[in-house]
Every structure is written in C-alpha cells, then in structure tokens.
Image (cartoon, rainbow, N blue to C red; front, side, top):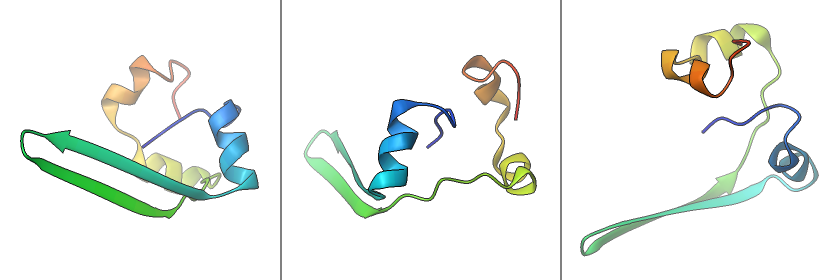
Length: 61
C-alpha cells in the first residue's frame, strides 16, 4: 500500500499505527490486521517503487 507522506491517512497512522485490510471475492474473504510503518528512508522508498505509482505520485519517489 502507498499513500502520500502528507496525506491525512499518513497523519492518522503516525498517531495510531493499527490498521486492517479486508478483501472479498466470491465465497472467499481475507482480513489482515497489524501495524503500519510510515517509511521515510529514501533508499527503502526507491526499493519499493513501482512504475505505476507515477500515476499517483507524478513527482516520483
């Protein structure tokens, strides 16, 4: 998952890192629970970068 460093969601995660993601397809479902990490290290950001992110982050990493 990726979101902008200055987004409201990132601010929420900095205050409370608990999160969940739920997906449902047909008769199957999946729930993930855990803690979110906000990554600020540029080397790590570059290693996680996906080409399609450019659509959402036009200035790049």
